[in-house]
Image (tube, rainbow, N blue to C red; front, side, top):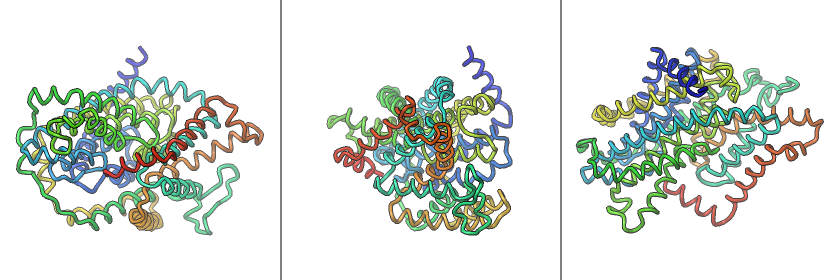
Length: 502
């Protein structure tokens, strides 16, 4: 009964005219970002964080969430029609989606992607509503030691599931932790690592560092690539799959939804991991007798991963909303948005801001319904956007980024930090270092330090407190197990092969 009352509160919040408007803006922007290759959801959220400063926290979070799961829908459009993923989770959709388009079945592929995403999104929203309250009850039993161990597990998960070298992912985590502790000491208030620069005494601004690492870097990388690919925008055809095709895709949609829902909750997981795992599963189940073969236009290679990436995108909200732990870079930006509004992420959000919590959950279902309406009938409009020259987009994006960063604190130093982080992000790209672990380290660093010092104060300096408390011990054992597992040669090799498809 409590769940029904909470959902009633959520829908009454989400159905307010203001929140409906921001939900629509969010999913429309998300679809747009997904359709335009080269601008992923992380970069877009980083760019739009300054705008949320003037919004109501509930409206801001609803809009940002809409951008995130909306981009999973839109990303399939360019993957299928141009063989270029609109965002990273749509990489595997290119393999079979583009081949279907070449055979004149682009509309079928787009329709299955949208329908699968809608089903997965609705199921994942139910999971968020059902599992969040019991997890929050568990989280209230957490003390400083348990929170520290949970954050250790989150960072280890980010290392294990990061693209490329484990050593590089570790280095990025450490760099993020170091950047996060710049400024005033948690307990004494003494300034640390400010090098006599007064602007650094309050620490590095989260919006500046995230916009530089993701927004500016993304633009520079795409300008460097300058890729031109064959577009099949004239051959879309009917977007409704036949009854036979739909029935054939239902098992793949179901498997992708369940797999994505589970993987989205894991630290470091989310939509990208879910889509790769789903494609691997479908390929293994289809075997060599699949008709047509995978990679040559098999519809299960589109329906499964597209369902998985949308389910993973929405269940990744569970650890962020219940524990205050970001499971990926996008959730780290969501936590940054909460912090901008002086809301401490974690289990207390549901009790202190129930309208925000349940309003966000209800808005996910509304947003998924809006996305089906946007993606199926209006596919022709999104196709036309693929013809917009990037030379028109990038100067405007850079200008708005700089204005947005400056507007938060009215401080030009933040713009300099953004430019510096953009240059660093480009260097990381050239060195094949993923910036997502850095952002997770930057967000979790101060929280880890605070909980570490609180735990040691309560135990009078005894570090064994992390091993004598059962929940803390279990979390640390899980982190150690993950670390040892990924260091095994066979597992490490499989991991590298899986991420090579990117």
